[in-house]
Length: 91
Image 1 (tube, one colour):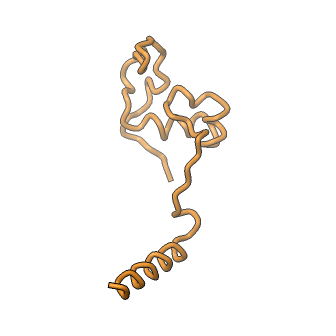
Image 2 (tube, one colour):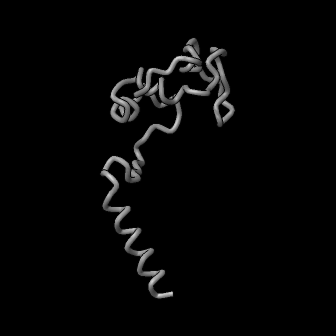
């Protein structure tokens, strides 16, 4: 039992040191949560540009309706409207 725990602990240590810094979990509270935040400084800072933010956050969203209702039941202009739903130029 003790050797099992020891081998698990060693395995966890090896895996944690073997992962590059990019593969480790990173949490940022300033990340834009919806496509409506892409034209704010937060969205531009996180993704580098409004266009890149919309590319990332509009994937799988409604791109056909110019106006939509958000989670607060407010009618808003859809920032994803008119985008091509099948093209993604991500990395």
